[in-house]
Amino acid sequence: MDLRYPLVIVGILLLLFPYFLFVRKKRRKYSSGSKIANTFFLKNTDYYKRRLRNYKIFRRLLLALFVVAIFAATALIARPYETIVTVEEKYNRDIILCMDTSASVDDLNLELVNSLSNIVDKLHGERFGISIFNSSSVTLVPLTEDYEYAKTILGNIKKSIEYYESMDYSSFDIDEYLYMIQYIQSGTIEGAATRGSSLIGDGLASCTLNFPDIDSKERTRIIIFSTDNDLAGKPLLTTAQASAIAKKKGIKIFGISPELTSNQNLLEFKQAMNINGGKLYTYSSGTTDSIVQDIEQTTKTKLEERSEAKERDVPLIPYLILLLGVSGIVILGRKVAK
Image (tube, rainbow, N blue to C red; front, side, top):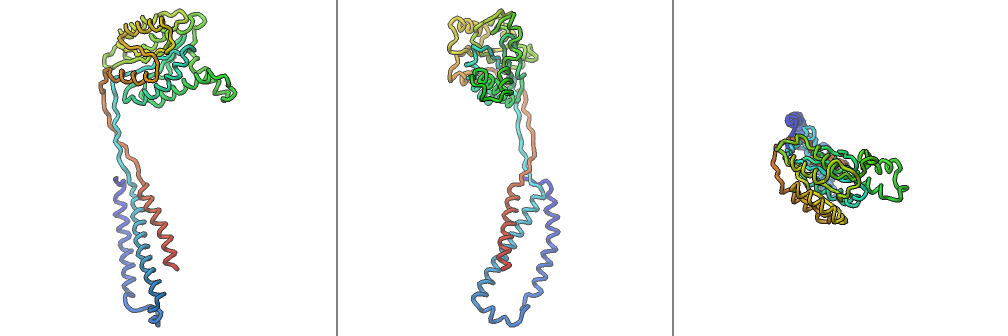
């Protein structure tokens, strides 16, 4: 712990030194003799001796507390502080959640957003983004290191699904309810009337465009792709074609599918992941841990490490000492005055 203004202590000590000299000189003036005559018999009584003894003890304690309070107040004026050094590390890994928001995947997504918050908590210096799709794709979180914001958006997705599935909307605030049920639908169902919904390949291909400097080889790029691969429209690209595009651009895909996905859809999904060189998971309680472990095994290189020193005032200890000192002075002052 350091002081911002250490010279304050020197200045106050210089001011107090003449005061203590004056008090000492004044006391020595009556060091012998008595200011009151005919007190011999009084001073020999037990009551007087006891009160005198208590008075001396309380006075010394009072003086000690007075000195302590002065030094505590001086320390506060000098502003004690500590220096905290934070180290910020940045890594060459970008991770984007690409989420199918069609109603058939609601149960998977509801479980997934809870688990993904844990994934985000385990990130250190990587960039994370969120993209959702149905008929069209919408970017909710561009690649960012603001993990708290990403977790907030994951919470909004969860709330949107819960509100949409709830049959008792009367228990919600109506404005919030109307906003939340549209949260993952607004923008994602554009073109549904002509092209249909659950355009899996188009959603995955759109997600690959969220990576900046896509041809750069400096960064590892990963997509966490959740869908049941149940196509319900006419996409421009199949899931396999989109997976091949991702591979060409150096993007690895970790696919997640619900346990109730049909065998045919699951087979096609797995084949698409094989084209990319990625991996397909069927969602279960341990899926998130497996994804984190596999992501950790991908290439991750530290791009930079930046340290930043911040100063923070730490007045608590001298403040508490001052508070105790002043409280003691008030209590003992009454004792001495009696």
